[in-house]
Length: 187
Image 1 (cartoon, rainbow, N blue to C red):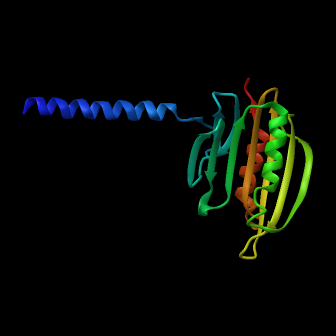
Image 2 (cartoon, helix red, strand yellow):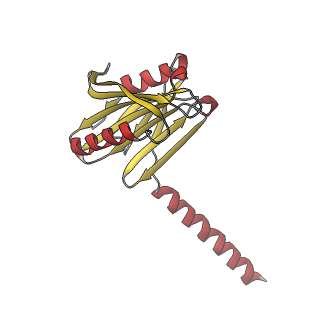
Image 3 (cartoon, helix red, strand yellow):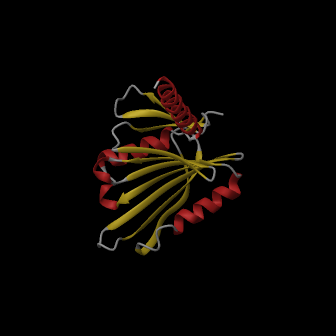
């Protein structure tokens, strides 16, 4: 009986250790308290960059897929979504990402139009490429995808806002503008 207890204890410990090792291998950014309780400071990709993100999101999902490290925040009500993604490859990879995002929703939206496509300067003085794409959903509502693309050497980050055009107001708009304008490279 005693050896059976040791085996169960050993297997339990082994499962815990394997679970801990698997969890530590996953991508994790870091969240820090901000003086404004509506926001957290978020540092992503091993402290490569930081920005303000909403602290009142409905869900937060971090993942690393093929080297693209992403934080996806679903805001209250299940929609809209703010994404923060980083990846290497320099400006050529960033151009490919921008082209992909511009065509990403054409299969579910009709009358897709790019309504903004220009370079902006954020409040932190960073130059970034800004695009807005709008189209009609199958349900007849106007959808919008906003994206801002940052590059520094081999490093790229894009911020993306996805939702209905009517949702881009009030708190949702403030969350987006704070994210874009607070973005900063840390190294």
